[in-house]
Length: 223
Image (cartoon, rainbow, N blue to C red; front, side, top):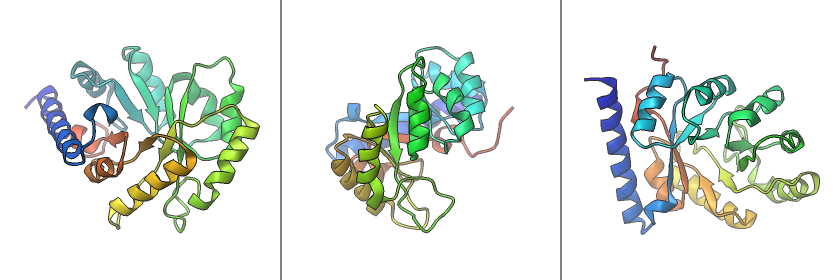
């Protein structure tokens, strides 16, 4: 089987799953953006996705995103989903159209200071696993204060909230929690759900789902 056919078949299955999840939840399919996560896969795979109609692609590493965005058509919307490092902000801002992982006021100020950069949309990352120190994000009980400070210190108006559901728990609870926090933040977009749980995310109101392995296969760079 060619790589083109493999990806095409996987993508068709994912799109079918999305359509079924939307229908069963009485959701409008057009409200749901599929982000194909191309992390650890070559530009050639991203090109195949483009030819199959994908226009939203996600990267977790600045270096990969910068390189791929230069080699692929300009009408792709690039989504940065990894943890933000201060020294990478200028570079991220040069290629990313949407940042899903804003969780620091100092990072927000640095993004805002890049006045000559292209417009970027931001999701605020929410940490629903406060016991995990390796998980980035804003604590739910700190969200309102963060939003107040964001308004005072920058002109950034987030378009939505993002979270990663705990691996060892039913994701539905986390997704419903994010939906509740979305109402507190007065945002309509929710970035949640990956290959193993995006149906539950759609049922809870996800507008952006981030799918990698179900489309491109297991992680591990392919030459």
